[in-house]
Length: 170
Image (tube, helix red, strand yellow):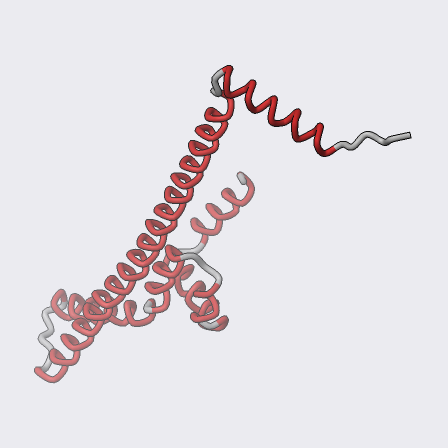
């Protein structure tokens, strides 16, 4: 609980966020993203999709930083360099859109599955309530016999018992 939280806070203050992300990416890359994906729930898979694209996102940031640095220093890139910078930034933006779409698909699938599970739960609950209602009706039917019906049932029972037991003759 608290010990782990303090430890995590110490790590976060000691190591910049980018380095932590790079280390997480490296660990997952070594383990294999498909293998890690099998171990987490849908929300985890959605997050994992962005972690898997981390290096490409960093490359896009690098291209943006390069363009900003050149502009701040008053250096105008050649047409070829500008095309390459633009291409790198567009690739990162396209990747971000793709990852967002994949994350949306993963979460929509999880939501659909949760809705189906909830429907099945409530259908089971409704069936159970119906069965309980039928059982109560059956029980009520048996307990609300008229006095004449009870006498008739008692006489039939006694006749059945009398006929089923034969007295020994000595």
